[in-house]
Length: 235
Ligand SMILES: CC(C)(COP(=O)(O)OP(=O)(O)OC[C@H]1O[C@@H](n2cnc3c(N)ncnc32)[C@H](O)[C@@H]1OP(=O)(O)O)[C@@H](O)C(=O)NCCC(=O)NCCS
Image 1 (cartoon, protein in one colour):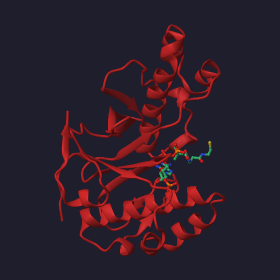
Image 2 (tube, protein in one colour):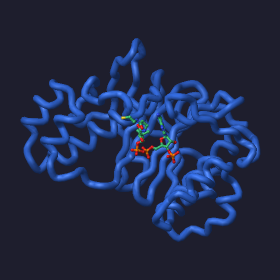
Image 3 (cartoon, protein in one colour):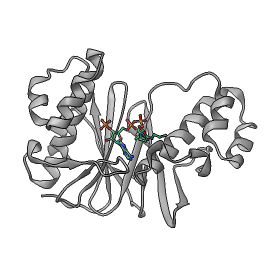
Image 4 (cartoon, helix red, strand yellow):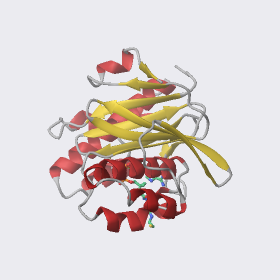
């Protein structure tokens, strides 16, 4: 079992036509029930592929069989492993999923592949703090989509790290929208460490930890042979 300190980000490509049978056999009953509820075939396949990969990676790190891992969801909604102190957080968007794992930090992660909607100033009122809105109003129109996404992924990563998800009003937090990879944000008596990341070519995201994560290790495809490969270190 590998117990490297710090934070690892795993990139999982989600082929919409991936065969499902073996993947389904790795999931627990709750995951299979959730998979059945998807209306669109493509969305179900992506969910199944993401959760099968999640279990394979957690199995790789804990030395336990994938299907035997008990993933529980406490009242705040953030899934966690029962019995093993390995922290993880999953995010998926389009054909991609990413997983953040750590043995010593609480972690949250977010990726977004879709461009934000067209009414960015209206959305800014819903998700940005007052200082962020003031800066956003000065951003040139052509730079607004990227600035908005950067801020949004940071907020989601932070809210997911703490387990709040969107139950907490994102306007109560200031994470900034200017480029710059690392930043620290205090929330509820904890200093959270945010990093902008590029977990795969052309894929942007944000990851958050409750301790300085040090250099982030990236594990990038081809899936799943990279389980045995060497991680790519990033500052
Ligand atoms: C968690 C949440 C932020 C996910 O946002 P998203 O951008 O759609 O999804 P992502 O792909 O980045 O993350 C989804 C994953 O986060 C994890 N997750 C779910 N709830 C979480 C929470 N409270 N904290 C951290 N992670 C969470 C799950 O692993 C989930 O994957 P799964 O659905 O395949 O199991 C959002 O759905 C949420 O806040 N939900 C719960 C709060 C809520 O419903 N509040 C209602 C009152 S406003």
